[in-house]
Image (cartoon, rainbow, N blue to C red):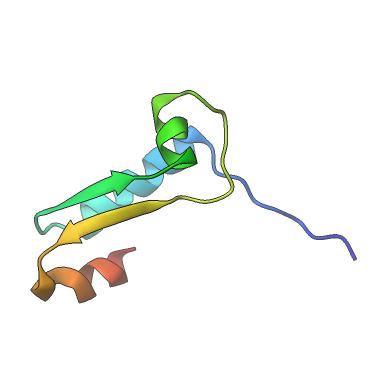
Length: 68
C-alpha cells in the first residue's frame, strides 16, 4: 500500500495564519520555526508541516489551542 503525503506551500501557510488571526482575537505572539520560517520568507517552496511556538496569556491558552 502506498502512503500519500501532504505538503504545505507558502499560500497554504498564509491561509493558516490569516484563519488563525481571525479565529483567535486575543493578544499573543506567534513564532515560526525552522522550515516554516524558510517557507514564509520564500527561501523554500514547501514543507511537510507548520512548526511554530506561541506566547499567549495563561487564561487564553485553551482558546488558542482550540483555534489552532
